[in-house]
Image 1: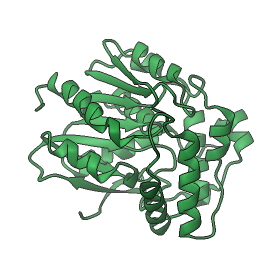
Image 2: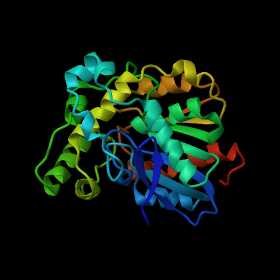
Image 3: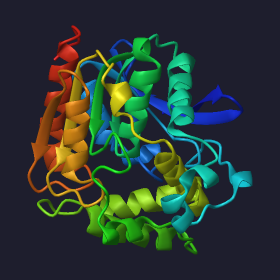
Length: 294
């Protein structure tokens, strides 16, 4: 796969696609501090096998996309207490980055699937650019930073910190998923280490994670905007999520008229491979409401 670049307001967004281009367009949006690699290749190809052309991308401040280093590194206390004072951008800017990827692909609209922060961005796309969204899937996310707040241990585990080398980052990735991952499913440590090493090699920027977190907290509550969303909407959430509690998923589903909530016992804040078939089935069933293949 070849990395391509979209551009929006001085920011470059790196993206890549799966499939031959003939399928239904689907945009995958990843979460806080995670690069596009965190959408497992097998998950993407599973969607391709169901009739989709899939695009995934690095949000601003991670991976091969633009890092806004000149904005500095906001402190965690300020992010939590006065995020508007330290946030250098908002979720609206990140949503517009995602739409720039659609433009670069010449996709007038797409099925939009977002996980965690990616779910917040996906929600924002549906609010700001409703004509660009065929269906909306919000996974392990929330409509407000005040709903489904993280357990303290999970939040502290994600606190930005520098590591010395790629192996150190691989080990950090394992530690993170041991805390936020699914207690009902075994952690794939080999995958976590691999993603950690690859992510370090592509770009390690602890301050970028802090800037993304500030954007989340500074962007406020989306429930009023979600009340106007009219595309088929699916909400997927783990019942054991320590980072975004199940109340976040419930609130998202309650905010969007006609949204369907599906929860998974034993699932935390990750994508256990054992659940991929069920999740893909749900996403395909949603897309079928717009006439997409199943």
